[in-house]
Length: 375
Image 1 (cartoon, rainbow, N blue to C red):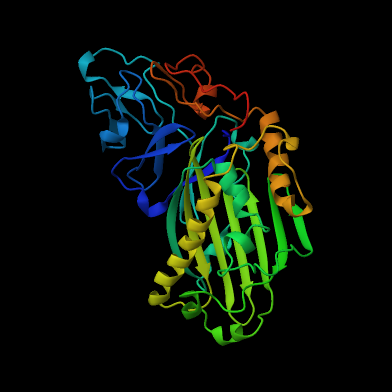
Image 2: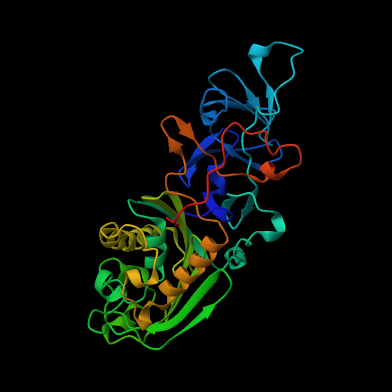
């Protein structure tokens, strides 16, 4: 798993003035909205006796630990210790980590790391989402699988005829045709034409405005898939005579063995509400088909060495993901899967406040160390 990246952690409307708990990188965060609507993100563990701040209340942008009433501001500094009484200063070490937050494209993004702002990989440009021509649905899927396996599956073209045959991808035409791959510093995008079954299965035919076109062999679908390291995936389908559908998902590494995918699926055809139900069922049918395979992959984690698995030309997107992953490891961004610590100790993903002058040694809980391997 990797620190020092932006993660889309929640849909915007999931975060309110009431504190809520969110788990990422084996660590719990508490999120809430301040008086001006800004989202706050703090470590969920009180440094006094380990109480969960998310079980407390927020008043005047201060969250109160439910155990002993300690109050923490949006910067993570403790401002209230009831047991001290009046006049006693609050220790500088009475603080929890507070993380940068941005809100874009319907998601709340949290920066899980401590590097300076100018060194951070930017949030992907998803501005097309604001175009009113799109009809959108959304949902989530919980996997008992490592998020890197989930991300690689999302951009893998050669599995579709076998895992998704009858929905998209033709089992009778499995070869991956000529494709193009663009590679950026922290992303890659593939473009390929792919055959589909002659007739869509089940309720999919109800969703397509020109389903008669499928009674004979349909023209190929233009497929674009992309990943934005470490956790965002795009699947973009242009279907001749029908329209375009784009699925963006954020694959949250809850821990090394659990992934929470939150997705938004856009389409520019059949924009009625009744079609939303069918579209959601189809998207989640695809997730279920993938889940059946991905949760059984062994080893559960991507091998450390490229030679640990056999690669083909059609695996180029997976290879690009692993090359970028190696770069993140070299930068020291990887963290151990057991980042939370043990039953008698706890570590925390370091926040930018740990780099501020005078605060270098003001932390009770140690920073999660760099991982021996990326998980």
